[in-house]
Each structure stands twice: as C-alpha cells, then as structure tokens.
Amino acid sequence: MQPYQHILIAIDYSEFDPAVIQKACNMAKQTQATLSLLHVFDNIAMPDTAYGTRISLDKPSDYALLNSEKNRLRQIADTLGIDHDHAWLIWGSPQQEIVHLAEQQAIDLIVMGFHTKQGLALLLGSTANSVLHHAKCDLLAVHLPAA
Ligand code: AMP
Image (tube, rainbow, N blue to C red):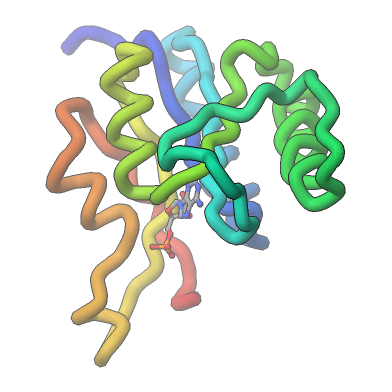
C-alpha cells in the first residue's frame, strides 16, 4: 500500500477536535504525510458571499466574528506547525466543502470525527457519513462519544 502523502483534518471547533487531530498527527508521523487543516463555517451571515468561498486567514476583517473564526484556525495551525497555506477556512456546507477541498488539494486521506447516533439523529445522518459517500479518497472516521 502506498503511504498517505497528504492528510486533511476536518475540525468543527468542538471539544472533540483534539481526538481527531491526535489521530491525524499520528498517521502523518507514520507516513510522513503533509497535513492540511479545514474548518467550514456557516454560522455567520456573509452577504454577497458564495458558498465555497475561501477566507484568507492573514487579512484582518472588519467583522469581529469572522476574525474570531480566523484566529481560532490560525492558533490551531500554529500549534500543529501547519503552514497557513495549508489551513483552510471556508464559508459553506461542511460535507460539500470537505469533499471539494480534498479533490482540489489532492488529499489522499481525510480524518474526521464520527459520533455514534441513535433515533432521529441517525435518520438525519452525519457529516462523516455524507463525506464517506462522496469523497474519492480514503476516510479515517474517529469514533467520538455521542454529541
Ligand atoms: P457531525 O457529524 O456534524 O457531528 O461532525 C462529525 C465530524 O465532522 C467532526 O468531528 C469534524 O471532523 C467534521 N465536521 C463537522 N462539521 C465541520 C465543519 N464545520 N468544518 C469542518 N469539519 C467539520
């Protein structure tokens, strides 16, 4: 099997991110892969912005909420030693943007969390499930406690 060369870590800024990051870092260490980091957000209104828009981390914005999204990703990237060129902040739908970025950046492994779900939540599906069905590369779904 070819070792992974480019691993994408998808983080949702939740308390579970460290577990996902840890798994991805372990895998990158074993395979000497490059790491990229992605957070997708749609919790902030972005008038006149199309879904899928990439937000520059290093240009400050007039919008305090957007700056806090940027600062958070910058801090995590810096802690992990990931260059800002490989830290992606995208406005859009997490499922779609994870798959899209993975294709565009020639990612060969996506690492993301997977919460065991029951009842209605099971019917609604999970981000990892959707990515699994649409991504062309491998997916490592890190089992997390129920959200
Ligand atoms: P969920 O199915 O929404 O509970 O999310 C499970 C996993 O999907 C998280 O642990 C992340 O790895 C990934 N994910 C969910 N939302 C986002 C997001 N907004 N940006 C990047 N990754 C996400």
